[in-house]
Image: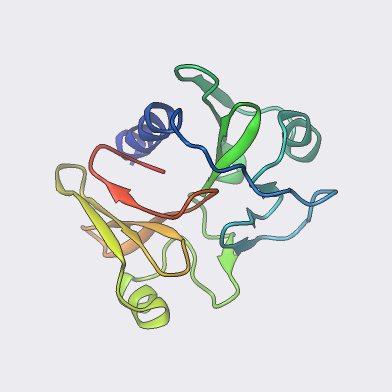
Length: 171
């Protein structure tokens, strides 16, 4: 799982520099729930938030990983959150804990079959078979990583850009 998560972070840090679309406007204050809202937020972590918002709303991260240019990944292990920043704004938010859920009940640990039954067929996929995983994008712009051994969701990710799955990383 740690290697797979590292691949996702590496993909973010190597792949965001060319993005042009501005991130969405974040809420004016932290929203204290565990809801996953596509293209908006996961709990308190919102797309478009500044690093000052991040520090105020979530506190000090457990790990900071710097990429090229202005790309930074902030990890909050105790909250199961990772937030990718480019040019000082959150571009990607990812959860690895079952405490965060979509309005229709999908969370980390949900069986792949239930995800497909709820959201339909993926619009894109990438095979990370050597890491026991697949990444799927769905029409709701949520990205889901599935563990091939258990056929359950291992992460859910939102992004300021349209979801796509690619070999060697994610955005």
